[in-house]
Amino acid sequence: MATEEPTVLIIGAGTFGASAAYHLSKQYKDASRITLLDRWDTTSPLESKHAAAIDTNRIIRTDYASHLYCNLANEALHFWFWNMAVQGHFRKTGWVVLDKPEGGFGDAVRKTDVKVEELEKWDVMKGVRAEKFNGAYFNPEAGWCDAEKATRSFTKVALDLGVQRVTGVVEELLLKRGGTGVDGVRLSDRRVLSAEKIVLATGAWTSALMAPVEDMLGLREDERVERQITAVGRVSAYYALDERETQAMIDGGQPVIVVGGEVDIIRPSQLNRTLKVNDLSTEVVNTVTTPSGHCVTAPSRRNQNDVPERLKRESEKVISAAMPDWTKSRTPSRWRICYDAVTPSEDFLMCQYPHPQLANLYLAVGGSFHSYKFLPVAGAYMCNVLNGKSNGEEKDEAWGWKSGEWLEKCKGKGKEFGNSKRKRGRREFGKFEEGASAKL
Ligand SMILES: Cc1cc2nc3c(=O)[nH]c(=O)nc-3n(C[C@H](O)[C@H](O)[C@H](O)COP(=O)(O)OP(=O)(O)OC[C@H]3O[C@@H](n4cnc5c(N)ncnc54)[C@H](O)[C@@H]3O)c2cc1C
Image (cartoon, rainbow, N blue to C red; front, side, top):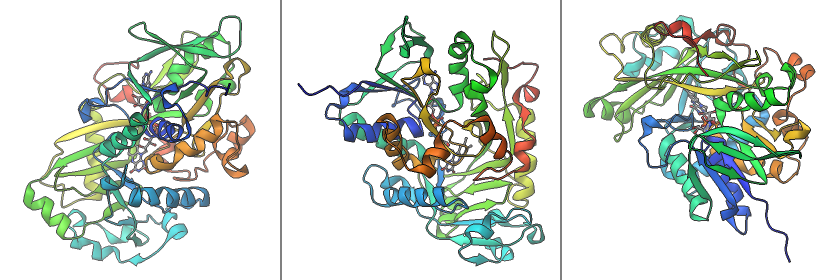
């Protein structure tokens, strides 16, 4: 009799979870042995799905200073253009990147020089001070995608092939009695799910979820997942536009615009009529202490759409400095603080948990604010990790569990954003809240 394919439970249906489910479902003869679990139902409204993979949009581009991610983004771009599951959600608008003098990002990936002064042809760039920048470049192959619809239709392929979708909140990982490994999970409604392999694709929530097990196993600070990833929040402002303004931006060929280190400006579609601005300069963390006295970072329990007023004011300063004229007479119609798991080197973390008692536990996290674009491909590499196959020396090293020495060496050398000022200036979310303190 043929040996049965191992059962797999993927916790988290965001970028890494959806991608792993998609690729595993293509490999499995019986995809019903795979379960994809998340706290939100696929049919819930966009605002209630607190995942970094779910938003009005995410930028898709291939420009990277790192060859590894440049190649991987080119691999993913093929899907964004040609794969039925996601292609309809991608808008090829191109993107313009304005480089700060100290930035250097553009120097590494520069394709087409653009004069900063010429960018004033788009209203959102009126009043921008050209002398603040070291130039700009344009790449027509980039764009943005509807990150809610694309995640949903990519996941649908896996579900149609037989993957089970469960809605529920994982409260606890259950260790095998007297053995090694994780038996399954207990949900907040007391249901228990078991599987032979368990994948944590829980993004910014990973460290908080692991903390009780790590406490139970008495792991040292340097053996914990918190050493590998930090849960970091960033603020986005959404400006509702009327039909005329929307059409003018589309007809004017306004691309995605990145004002180096300050903001991303993502143009509206006729459907969403929303100009989205990501604040790239303000980052917050929510540090909580576990019962054993360890500190972990976790997204605040506060609703992501309820951004504290003080944080909005802070972000408004950044946005109006970057878009001085356009923002004068406008206020955002909504705000969001969205969390991602950030690794010190900005590489993914796709590996087996190294502790022998957690041998069947795998991690697929570490989006580091740049990984949505890899939705179509990241899972293929995660399948190799689950099957015990190498992804090649470079990727195995980049995506593996990092030693203390490795982490020390890469301090301040993030592959995507380098040693940016915002990383050094991360503040506690609680400081912006009205009289509240951090909660796990
Ligand atoms: C503001 C912002 C802007 C970004 N812009 C871009 C961009 O333009 N381009 C780009 O490529 N990338 C971008 N990114 C990065 C990208 O969105 C993330 O790197 C990526 O989505 C991370 O994927 P993930 O699967 O690790 O986490 P997520 O997508 O957050 O998924 C984690 C999932 O786990 C679930 N979960 C967690 N804990 C539990 C639990 N206990 N029980 C049940 N479910 C649980 C959550 O509900 C969530 O759905 C951006 C990120 C942010 C925050």
